[in-house]
Amino acid sequence: MTSDDSSHFSQSPEIDTTVPHSARIWNYWLGGKDNYPVDREAGDQFAEIFPGIAELARTSRHFLARAVRHLAGEEQVRQFLDVGTGLPTVDNTHEVAQRVAPESRIVYVDNDPLVLVHADALLTSTPQGVTTYINADLHNPDTIVAAAASTLDFTRPIALVLLQITGHIRDTDEAYAIVRRLMDALPPGSFLVFNDSADTNTENSAATQQYNDSGAVPYHLRSPEELAGFFDGLDLLEPGVVPITQWRPETPLLGSSTDVGVLGGVARKR
Image (cartoon, rainbow, N blue to C red; front, side, top):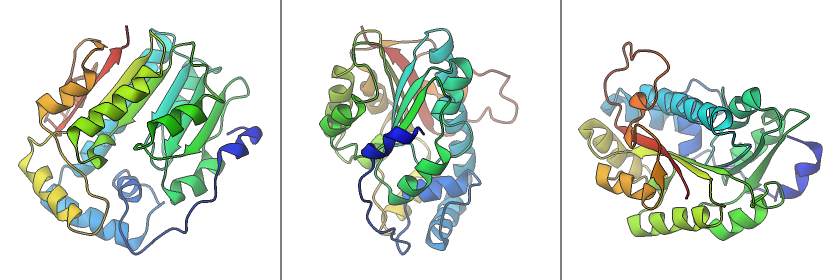
């Protein structure tokens, strides 16, 4: 992160270690250390019902890397708006993009205080590019756009990245409206990189219900048709909206051929 990005930071609330938090649980499933006992307990309880959750987290991360590499490489996108980024881990969006194009500019958005604590130390940038962080909520797309405009050029293509985040919005029509608002602010030639969990895996559905009963911010699974609806009005890149392990895999699906219950895709704005 560049030294002049401090203006994007606002005073964060005190970290609550008594209630599990999705960003910290996700970090635990990815093998990270930025979590608390309450998160590990919730993560383990989830995994007891849905043993595939750690693979789901890993495959979602791999999908992100493949999509960003494609956009930064073949599509020559140089700006990324990653909303709901979670805690920094390996192959963050800026690392993948700046390996391809060091001048890439990345804005991360999250509203978890622990993410805020770690962002300044871990989200570094190449000298040619910019990596910054906005403390904002997905429910406030206008705030996100206004803050991101100080780093990104909204007259040039931007890739909006929304991975495993829209499930936090209970109402599907509201979720569609928020994503449309964000995409409407981006110029033609921009992209949407999206994935989220489907309601097709009974173990995941049962584990998610238990998670929602734990006091954590609820997560809502959607049907494949509802997930595909996030791409309405956009031009999908091949192979379309598919299980994320099947989105342009770089190697044969060895041991990961099973559907982890997450659908995703990449689409271009006309």
